[in-house]
Length: 403
Ligand code: ASP
Ligand code: MG
Image 1 (cartoon, helix red, strand yellow):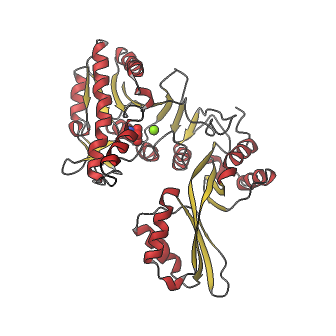
Image 2 (cartoon, rainbow, N blue to C red; image 1 turned 90 degrees about the horizontal axis):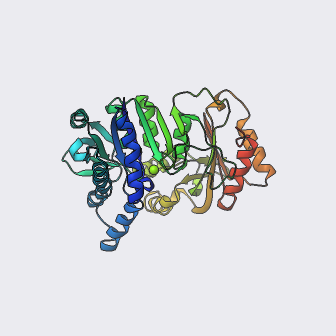
Image 3 (cartoon, rainbow, N blue to C red; image 1 turned 180 degrees about the vertical axis):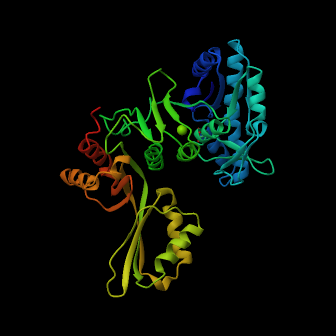
């Protein structure tokens, strides 16, 4: 069997944990399996590198940031190879250049395009454990790129797909995917299985367990993922195309405080105005989420939408500087808002899911500011202070605490 295992930063945070990971990989190796291991930078190293860079230059170039970032993952794989060697097992560390993990050239947010597997197969044939740096790629001119924060998951899935691995295991500091963040919802329960589509929604909504592009890629290539803890042997959560075990309509609840609501008021009520506004934002790479347009009156209307809180200032700047001033009255920004979402593949077949959510929020006296839905998701915008209360109320309303 060929197994790809990925360990996150906390899992390799210190000497003891590095040896713990080394032993877990060696266990599989000794069963005769081929083992490829993807590692993240140790602990908070990536954040520390950002701080170091900003201390030298508050506005560092993206290319040099990526050059700097790659040292984090490179440290992990080299130390891991040394640990395995100390335990008497041959291992070799490879970075994105040595493997040849080709990516686009968008520094800080590159996408993997193609992975050469020859070198890895060669090392596996020598019965070595192969340690690969997560999060990084190389562009057409061999510049290092990175895949976006949390991108090591995507490296692991891309490798599993390229190597046609028999298993892809994502080890982290939680035991799997939960019905909600256990730090926010006390009764949250670990899921045995979840579909790619549900996981994709949850990952995008800030559930934090998996990089959303890794889920996208896993779905595209049919790579079944297991998310589990590096610190114990508890069974994790399997992410796959369809689930059989759990027939719940809703699988999980997510909350995300990184949201801001922008309202553009007194817009001229004429054809093309929404196009011009959102096209402007798209051209500036601003991701818009929930959109709401009011009924027009007296020849004007209001359009409100949400963006991530970090991009709120930039969004307002872009509108103020580029949108014709004569076409609207004012812009209003509110950052003390949060998104609460319920996700479930079962929604496709069951009506009334949204109404249940609204009822739970009503019973807890939580005001809904905006609403958006997809086939398998309902999201509401609430006041930031209400987020946890809302998550708990909704979690309970759908009976997610029960197995
Ligand atoms: N070290 C990178 C980060 O902190 C990538 C990762 O951990 O997946 O974002
Ligand atoms: Mg992660």
